[in-house]
Length: 68
Ligand SMILES: [Zn+2]
Ligand SMILES: [Zn+2]
Image (tube, rainbow, N blue to C red; front, side):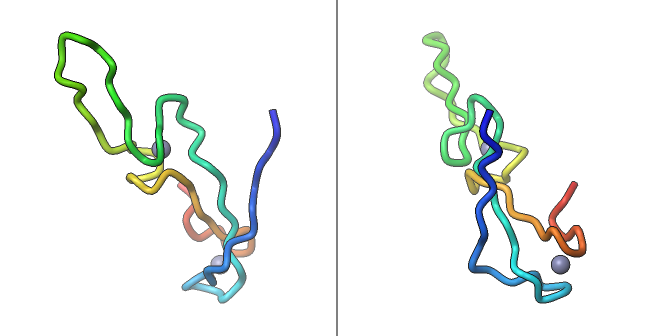
């Protein structure tokens, strides 16, 4: 598996270092939403808890901001 960490253009609000981001690793996550394909349910869409609906995770490698 490729560790696909990218440099973000956003600065860390805590230390000013650049943030890095990675696509959300939740398998069912599709750009921040979990789509339930169960035909008995009306395609219920839930916000992914890992990435909070953003589809990616962003954190600071310098001070740990954004890490769980
Ligand atoms: Zn997600
Ligand atoms: Zn930081």
